[in-house]
Length: 209
Image 1: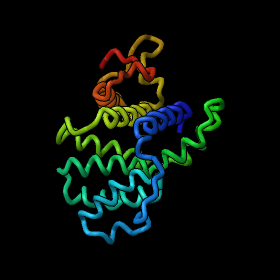
Image 2: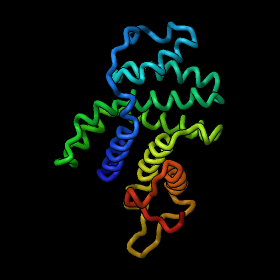
Image 3: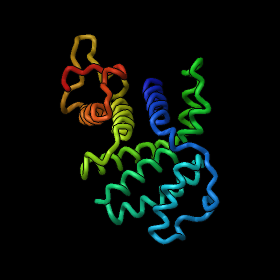
Image 4: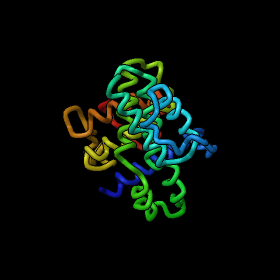
């Protein structure tokens, strides 16, 4: 993974954590030690909703696996899609990764941050929000739009071969339609705008959007 892409992912991590930190209140849950897969469907959903406030990364990852199975059975359920998205973010290790972030030595802490993150779950969160937005755009919160836009921005940078390739090159030409990363960048731009942000806030200025 290129260093610039890693830094983009750190930025994503910071903003996801900032937007979702209300979930990580570390409240005690007496039933958090139960295996959610053994619960009836309604209780699985209630358990998953409650586990978001537990601060327990492993429990959220386990709950995500259960809710993702329910999403597979009922993909048009917007509430399940968004619940899965939030669980994926929590289960990805965001809170743990943030504790390892050294803002005074960002470059050297990037590898530690990435090692602590389950990037598959981070990516899965975006997939669920995209699905929910396609079903009911109004059901998605600004924070979920912004978080997903940032994840897509990181993915676009990876596809384009580096964050710098998203912007104008030395001849003033920007990444354009048909080139690797552009379609994902378009989606990132849309979701970030819906979240109240702008690509320029994150150092991206592309004349072809």
